[in-house]
Length: 248
Ligand code: NAP
Image (cartoon, rainbow, N blue to C red; front, side, top):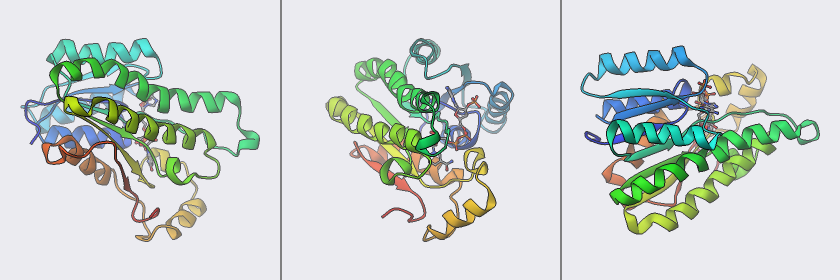
């Protein structure tokens, strides 16, 4: 379904990004997979893809997406390697949760630098080649926190609400160029990020979810695959919530 397409996935060394990269590889996309610090995990991802999907070309690129110049290197490497970028998945993200009264300026800035500015940086560098190609699929990872808010996540919710605003604005700017820009707002998905929550908090959250369970990485990866594919050609500027019915 995605043969001959080139996808860049940020934050692919763990969790949702790792699952997205595997899903896109399974559909035949060539990949540039980004990481910041987890070199061993990205190497494991590359080897897994090479073994399971030998027709797929995959390159790992270390870059801190919060840094404008490093984000440029990531996108330039994809262009130098493959000559095009069809799909950009802005997945890299961090949390630094605490109540506002205890939240430091550094906690606010760090989360917004990666989640919001990192997404801006990668879109900013990828948009020119996509406009030249007259083709692009940009998918940004937001969160239900950015829609409904979440106590302890003023910094994170701000970054994820900002991602939605950027998604809709860019979608309007580039729609005539056959570039779609959409966001996915996951609820609670089982990864290291949610693994940090203690058992009591996890149970309290599950009680708020109509399906009464956390989602799996595959639930997000399949939604990314759908939005990346030509089946979704007429969908742009949307936020698809994947949360077991938690927000309606
Ligand atoms: P995770 O398991 O903590 O993984 C985060 C990934 O982001 C890692 O691969 C990490 O790479 C990368 N990353 C962090 N800072 C980076 C930076 N400055 N530059 C490049 N890469 C960086 O997180 P996750 O749960 O898979 O979440 C993935 C995305 O989904 C995030 O945007 C998150 O906000 C969003 N989301 C997750 C949930 C959930 O329930 N899990 C819910 C809503 C939204 P290194 O390890 O190499 O640093």
